[in-house]
Image (tube, rainbow, N blue to C red; front, top):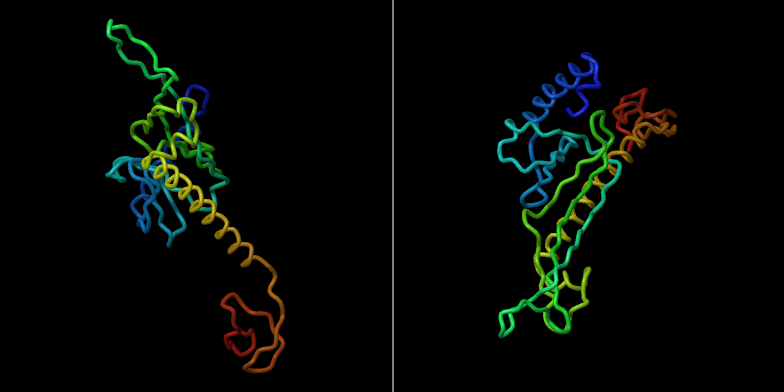
Length: 214
């Protein structure tokens, strides 16, 4: 809680109450799907919730539990750095290859944008250590996805990041479409059981005879 110096006592108490309420949400969380390896996105598809964690003991960490509908977007960031490779010549001097060779390092970060009172994004790195790819002879200027494509680890982490993005954005869209359909005005129809013109009730049944309207 980095802004505690500029927050009122009521605001601090409200956040402490939220943290305690979140413990209940963690206790009720039943993981149905896991995405990722080290930092993981856990989904409770039945409850429409998810959390992001690297911990094994959820009760101890108390990670934030969010609804799918709180997701506002998701980005994948693949960060590349490169270091020129050198070797020792016969005189013991450190010299570069000709043409130059580079060691590329990649980190894979997922940023989940959310609608939440205490934060607006969940940023986490998928890989514990950088994925390294040697350009090798003849590929001195080959960087970006070109260098990474030669690495199975690069392809795996990229696919993992894209899967997380796809699953969360699709889950959000599904929830929103379901809510919109539920809130849409129900059109009148003829009941196949009693022949009355009726509007389906909350259970999708005829208001007159109670028959199911399909």
